[in-house]
Image (cartoon, rainbow, N blue to C red):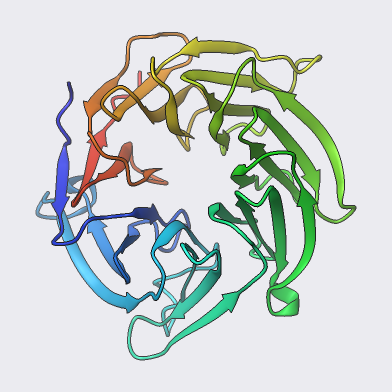
Length: 318
């Protein structure tokens, strides 16, 4: 088992978290605990003069409903004056909340109501024009920032929506993964389905779209890591391998390569970082509890939250 390279401890249990993936705020983290969203900065030894791991708590924001999913807006920046931090929280009351803060005094929150069951994932497109949310109510909803986050499109699904993803090289296309094992690509402008991919078996709990290579899509279905390479037709899975014997919870591609992915699953709620060509994990850690999984956008760290802890594992890419 691999111990975390760096570890943060908190007083309250963590429900989920997100690391900002924008160039101007790549060390910004939002951590959701009971009725509270904690914004903070993490600094790694690789980028600090004293070669220390540091955590700076910037601001606590009240959140009236327990958070199930988080996503930072792509225009979040800590170098602008004033700073602009925008993120979406999906609550246990089925509502989305868009928080905006300058990390000083000015905070606003906008509530979006349309879902009738739990929201499992939220994601902004690269331009910040659209927000996608997927829910147990068998829908993917698209909200437009141009119209004050009006619900402009709803894609009806045949099972719970588990993941929503966008890609910088594929504007106006959203990836939506369903619990029954189907992954769809939709065009938001034309409101048409472009393609559907099917995992060999379900339930599908999580899916991701490789930032590094838009042809690669992966899903965690049952305990299998299923990968598709869209450059090959027909689009049957290019790789299927069992990673978690008793079922998976979450999967994320490494941002700099489609050949490495991190996943969490059972038994023991175990974090594994695996390469495409091997079943021997680069990282393996038993967490016991699951509260989110995220890669750092620039540095070779994968982060996982469990109970009151947020751990960072440095990954040695081959």
